[in-house]
Length: 214
Image (cartoon, rainbow, N blue to C red):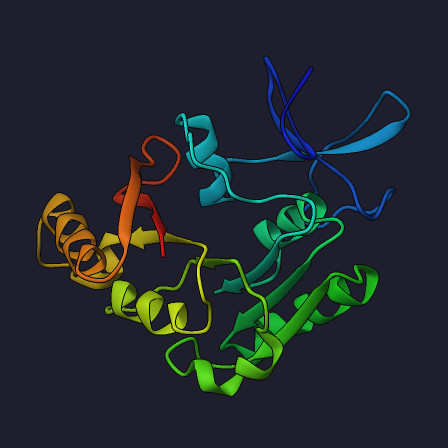
């Protein structure tokens, strides 16, 4: 077992994060003890960020005191692992679905560094009041204008990192996924520095993870 980033561990079986809420599972992940604390397994087939790490992600800006805006939080699978990592920081978890809030709100009640917000990621003014000091924006939304949404949310931060999980089939199902991904990256390059791009196969088909810096 090796700690590869703050509160992120890896062994021959896979990835783990140090649990901020020991004894509790979020999505039936495996719990294990290591050096007196609890680790939660982090499934790369359930998390694009974990998939990126497994594919060799080199740029990992998440730190203990990071303040994260997470767009497309859904039921909280990946946000819970981000919560583990930024254990002394904060995470604003935005999702448009009332249904997913039924899972996200109870999860956030157990984790003091998570704030669930029911809002549309296309309208950052709806949650801007919670975003002072944001230094990472992570986006995983299934909408056509994914790069444009990320750039709009980038206006909430002075500087920092932007991470986009591109879902090519959500952008344009009629085009070749590689061309769609190139197109979204081209939009990003007009306004921010693209520092790393990874395709996520075999964990996620027709997906890419793009890390940018503002």
